[in-house]
Amino acid sequence: MDLSLRSKVAMVTGGSKGIGLACAAVLRSEGAQVAIVSRSTDSLARAAALLGDDVLCLAADLRNESEAARVVAECEGALGPIDVLVNCAGAANRCSPFELSPGRWREALDAKFFSYINVIDPILARMADRGTGVIVNVIGAGGKRASPTHLAGGAANAALMLATAGLASAYGPKGVRVVGINPGMVETDRVGEGLAADAALRGKDVATLQAERIAAIPLGRLGRPEEVATLVAFLASPLSAYMSGSNITMDGALSAFIV
Image 1 (cartoon, helix red, strand yellow):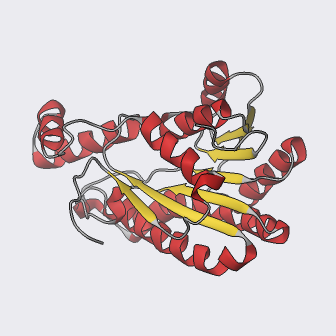
Image 2 (cartoon, helix red, strand yellow; image 1 turned 45 degrees about the horizontal axis):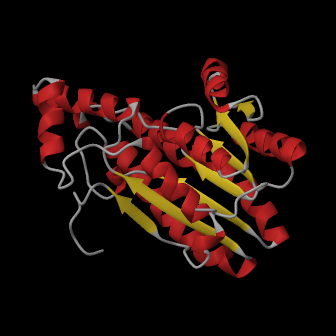
C-alpha cells in the first residue's frame, strides 16, 4: 500500500533500536527522508549500517531542552521542514515501589515525559506556522495499567497520553494532528528489562514470568516492533487524515475493555 509518504521528512526519536528503529525502517521503505535521534553514537552507527547511509543520524540527550531544540534545527537544516515526528525515545528505570523517592519520580518524568515534550515543543510551533504536520507518540500501556515496578514510568506515560489528547485538540485548528500508541509487550530489550525487574520483585525466574504473561495475551504471543511501526506509518500518512487525539492500545487484546 502506498501511504503517500514519499519525500516527506520524518524524525524518529529513539530511532537507533527497538520500535524506533523499526519505525525508521518502515518510513524509509515508504520513501520518506528519515532522521533518527539517539543519545548513543555507537547505537546510531549500528542503526545507520542497517538502514542505509541516506538516513540522517543525530546524537542528543532529549532530556535536555536545548539539545532537543538543536537537533530539530539540525534536521530541518539538512532535510527541510519536518512533516512527521515519531517519538520513541526514553524509558524510565524500573524499581521496587519501596525504592521510590521524589528524585526517582523526577528522573522518570525527565526520561519519558520531557524527552518527548522537549522535542514536541519546537516542532509543534513550526508545524503550526506551516499549517500541517503529524506527531505520533509511542507511549506504552503502562500508563493505563499500574505495575508495582513501573509506577513512576507509568505516571509519565499517563501524562503523555493526556498531553497527546490535549495538544491534538489545541493544534487541530492549525492543521496539526497528534496521535498516541500504547504497545503492550513487544519483543524489545526494554520489555526484557521490565520482565527482569518484575521477576525479581516477585521472586520468580524471568522465563516463568514471561510464559505467564504471554499466556494471558489472547493472541498468544508478544508483539513485534515492525507491527507497531506499520501502525505508526499509517497514522503518519494522509490515509488517516481524520485520526487525531486518540491513544490507541496495541496489546494483542490483553486489555479487553471499553474505553
